[in-house]
Length: 66
Image (cartoon, rainbow, N blue to C red; front, side):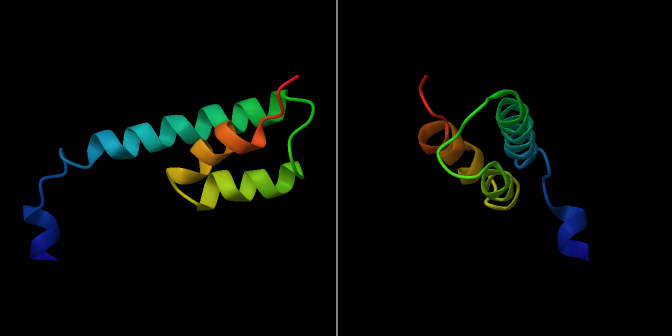
């Protein structure tokens, strides 16, 4: 536990904030969009559980250009 107390959390804070923003924006976009490439429930799982890469995959692959 001493390692966690001595760890510089300022290094990881921006990464956590970016990940949180990506997840929120991707989920909101998924809710608003009518159709995706694949089922929406699968994209929710990918966005939430594949960390930083999940929301990026949704924006690159999952959105259907209309």
